[in-house]
Structures are given as C-alpha cells and as structure tokens.
Length: 620
Image (cartoon, rainbow, N blue to C red; front, side, top):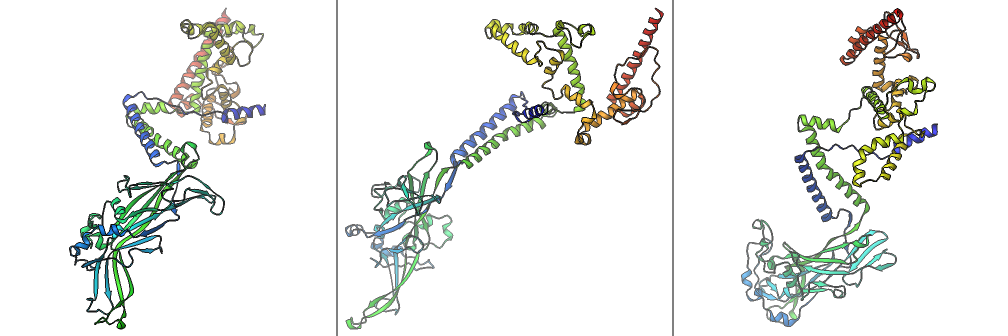
C-alpha cells in the first residue's frame, strides 16, 4: 500500500498542471478601457521590438586598412577656373581675429599643396591661407607675407576604407574597399570569402550624393579608391570654402569666428557607417556589408605652423652673397580625417528570450491596472468583485457546509433510485449491502439522462448510439468498485470530488489524534478550534465518551436524567472538563451558543417523548 500511496501523492501533486481561476466581470465600459490599453501597449511593444531589433546582439566595427591619398588636379582645369580669392583677396580682410590678422594680398601655389600626417590615424591637411614671416624682418620683403593658396577646391582626395568586427576569437570579419571580397575566420588561421563591401555616398539628409557621376561603388570600382575633388566632397555636406562658419553653429555670435571657412579653417570628416545583419537564421542572413559615407563639417580654427629655410638675395642681387634665411609659416586650411562607426547585428537567443519576457510583463500591466480599479475603486461593487475573485478557506467552518452537501447529495441519490433509505432495504439486516432494486444501475441513469439529451438526439447533434456510449462511459467512472451498480457512497464521493474537503478529510480531522502530525498539532488553529468545540459538546453529555458520542442518542426506558456535570476522560488520557449548558452559552461564540442551547432543548424534548411513549406501551 505504501508504494501505491506514494505514487498517488506524486501523481496528484506533481503530475498535474495548475490553471489559475478566472472571474470575468461583465462590465462593458471597464472591458473597453482594458482592451484599449492592451492594444496601445501591444502596438508600442511591437514597434519598440522591431525598430530596435531587441533580439539581436550588436557589435561595433573598428578601422581596417583605411587611408587617405591626394593628387594634384590637371593644370588645364586649374587655369580654366579663376576663383574669387585670387581675383579680389582684399574682400576677405578681417581685423577682429585674435589668432591671425587676415589680410591676404595675393594668390600663390604652395610648396606642399597637401600635407599627410598619419600620427593619429590617416589625415590630410589642405592649406587655404598661408602667412610667411622672415627671421631678419627684411625691409625688401616687408618682413611677412600673407596669401591664399591657388585652387585648393580642385585638390583630389582619394579614400580607402575598411572595417574589422570580432564576433569571437574564431570568427573575425574583415573587409576593405581595396579588396574584392570580405573575409571571415581566425586572424592567424584560414580565412574564407564572405560577402562583398558596397560603398554608398550620402548627403547630410541621407539622400544619394554623386561624385564624378556616381553615388555607389561596387568592390571592383572601389579597389582604386573613391576619388573626388575637395569641392565635390564639400558639396555633399552642403557647403563651400566661402561658407560663413557662423551659419553652421548655434549661438555663433558669441564665438570668435572668421566670416569664411577659407580663412578660418575647419575639419572635414568622412563619417563611415557600416551596416550588416548577420544571423544564424537563413531568412535573416545577408552577406553584403554596406558602408554609408556622409561628410561631416566641424568649424574650428585649424592653424598649422612649420619652419623652413629660404634663400633671400641681399641688396644689389649679387649671387655670391645669397644667404639662407629662416622663415616661419602659419597656415589655416582643411583637416581631413576618418571616423568609423556602424553596427553588426547577430541573432542572440538570450536577448530574444529577455525580449519575450519583457513583452509579457508589459502586456500584463493594463490588466493589473484595470483589476486594481475594479477591486478597489467601485465602492460596494468592488466588495462583490473581491468576493468573487478569492475564496476564503476555513477548514473548521467549511466542514459544516461539506457535511450539509453530503446529506443533500445522499437524498439526491435516493431520489434518483426512487426510494428512501430503510432498514428493510438491507436484506432484513442479514447483510450490510443494500438491495439491488434500490441502487443506481446503468439503465436507470440512461433513463434519467435521456430526458435531458432528447432534444439534441432529435436535432441530429447526437445519435442514440453515441448517447448510449456516453452513458456507459459515465457509469464506468461512477462505479468505483466496478460491481455493476452505483452505491450511495460512490455517488456522494463523485458529487464532492471537486470540493476542498472530502469524506476522508472529515475522517482524518475528527478521527484519532494519534495520526496528527507534530506541526499540525502546534500550528494548525483549526485543530485548536476542534478541541475547544469538542470540549463544549462533551460538557452537554457528561456521561458519554468521545467514541460513543451521538447527537440523537436514545436512552433506555426509565433511565435517569443526566446527572450533574462531572469530569470525563478520553481514550487518549486527556481530561475533558465538563461544562454546563449555561457555561457553554457564556464561553462560545453567539452562533455556537445558540446552536448548543437549541440542541439541549431538543434533547430534553426527545427524552420526554420517549418517556411518554414507554409509559403508553407499559399501560397497553
């Protein structure tokens, strides 16, 4: 029996699925508010998830094989385009600058049209305004000279770019505009081709911007570099060298800025944004990496200083008297550099699971809010909602309702059988088994249920064979011992099967205290209430033992009336104090006191009737 009971316990407690009990409130207004909130939260969650792709892991690319090159434009193009600075340099004069007095007088081709500096990454410096100061303050040259560089807009700037992303030590992706394919694998091991790198040039609004008639370069087209004049690159940013820097900065009136970018200098930055979605799912996999290039302009004073030697002829122009003179150069211009950014996304199961959990929590918030309003914001209506939502379980008091239901189900059973329980129904006392004619059989159940299912059988929703099969299946489950008929205990047990308290629970609760667990004896208040109530009941029957206590006990004829209260002892060795009816009435709650008082009056009336009945029999 122990293995069977253990298996039954495991089956009942651990092999089932718990489903919360739901109480549905019929309130159209409250339901409309709930559905509206749920729809709003659902729309937000979907938009938030898809816009941010919360189920992906983001990796940042780093620079790889990036460089900047320059070349001089063709001379015919330089001569064909005469610029305003060379025609009228005096229109750029300015005395307010604290860094440099801007007073160019001419336009010249510098010794170095472009200066390369890779100390802190690939950079170029294109001078636009140069001031030269001689160390001896020669009166012949006036001590200093300031001039514009000739046609800096036509300087050709060539960009080579690339990226590297390390997903893990065994999976590193590298790509360059100078390569035909992107490679993937270990840095010190075998690498395999994996997709292509596409370059797209955009303006500041994100629209395609053309240089040399192109705005997009394939790997084959970008292998020789992305070549464009400085003026073309600046046009993608929406400016030129003559743009006022104060129009590019907020609150620029408080800044010490020159009126032209040509005279002040600025930083032109290639903003590289690499985008790629890499996933373990085939329908999300893309092997193409796109590099979006935008030109970013940062207005700031870009002043470069250098010193060199220059042969200056002495007065009279005598050749043997040439002497090298030290000169210092100050130049403003355009600093060109590269900024690498972007993101590579991969599907991540952990982040996807976190996203689902977050969505589940957010979608439950409208329900929590509406339930709180319904349970605590509607006054007396909320009290009814709270009672419908929760069930109070008090074992001591619930036993009364369970016993009452057992009695009602018992009478229902005899009503179905068409009889009432009689002593003659048990074979005149020769056995403990009721007679078959007063038991529920499959035919009697089929006869009773046919009245209920008759409309459905006539409508064709169920035929007679299916109805008979259903009845036999029902009878099989009700007949617990499979003896061919349903007894009253079997019927009652089936009726209270979904109740919290079963018949066996009543037996265990009111039975022997030897089976009570230690913690149950110490902590279970229902056991304390049971003992107190039993003490009060025993006080009404001072001569009765707990095992033989009956509410409607019959006394033999001529038995004396109940004696004065005395002390009785239970079979467990526990003294039980005898309590008089008045004491019971004073010590118990009003409902129990009234019940005990009524019980005492009924017992006295019953004893009187029995005594009168016995006297009548003796007289006869």
